[in-house]
Length: 454
Picture 1 (cartoon, rainbow, N blue to C red):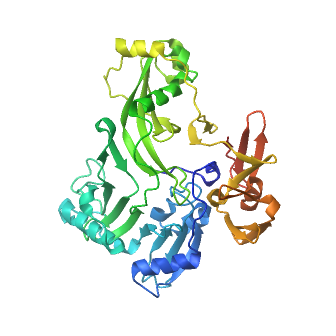
Picture 2: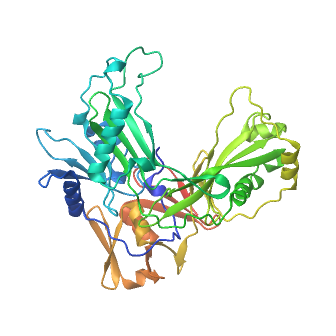
Picture 3: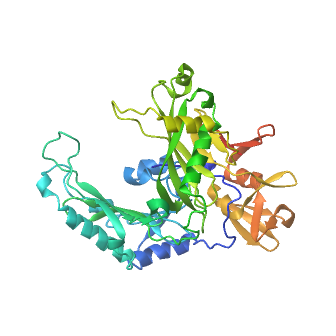
């Protein structure tokens, strides 16, 4: 799903290493030719995924344009290429991330050749589609071992219920690493290797590849926060909310844990080990209606808690109860909630204009009253920071700005540059509200959307 806008990507005080290498556009092209095994493959550089807008969307297949733009779902700004053949004898699109050199999106529309309508019996068996997907992955990743994965998809399916004996001319096969078992038999899903393959249903040819293969694990996979501690931290969301006075009881359910990239994955090692908790609240108080709906309807919220630090990393609406399902609290849950005290939390959240949760933002680093970000974080605004002599050069879309040594701060091996200079170069405006200790950032000359950076 789509999960970001480039200007809401400011995440500060990240624990990342200061030295990272990024492929240039030319090096990325050579990487694609190497992976494809076509030394003379003609390629055209389109731009960064986060910068592409309506012009690209109008000229690109919808399958590709839906992955890019200000709502790009990719973990950080990535290079976008397409093949450059006037006769379209080869027509492919590539999204390559510049830090590990992996192609994370490959699309070949010429491989979708089957008619849109036909009999379900025309589709290849699920097992054959899965094997075709495995064979494709092994071309790029010879060490790929399908036995390590939970494999799903590939089944015959009608375009929509009741459509009759018609098939979908494409199917998706998904590969997720098998989970390991951690504390109290909870499952841990490793999302650092996850691949989706779209194939022609009748020929088995691969149309699209999306995902990454074994990003190196850079954090501990042993929780420092227990599942029970995570449950209590998640409950603190409700204890500190405006709903608290109206709620009769609430409880949390731990569903498991994941290892994966954060919402903003700044290379090389910003990863998260997270507990996932469902929070449920119950109330018969009419005042509850104003924020949560019917007094009888339980409030359901999904909370992600960092299993190493205890920080809350995501808050999102939970599921809806099925018709007739009861969710009244028992005596034990009621007593537990009555004894609950407000928990001092360290997290902060930002809200959009509708009040829905957007992103966790860490406190700003400052120097002489100026907000600073690391050179890796500047890349989240598509600004490249290059070291030069005692200072640095900021580069954005062919524009360059040289900063003197006095404008640059170096701490604990990290290089920090002024936030305002990065925003100015990349075309953002910023407004600081001292009372709120908040910076409002928005892209210039675009539809106005404000996001808080705390």
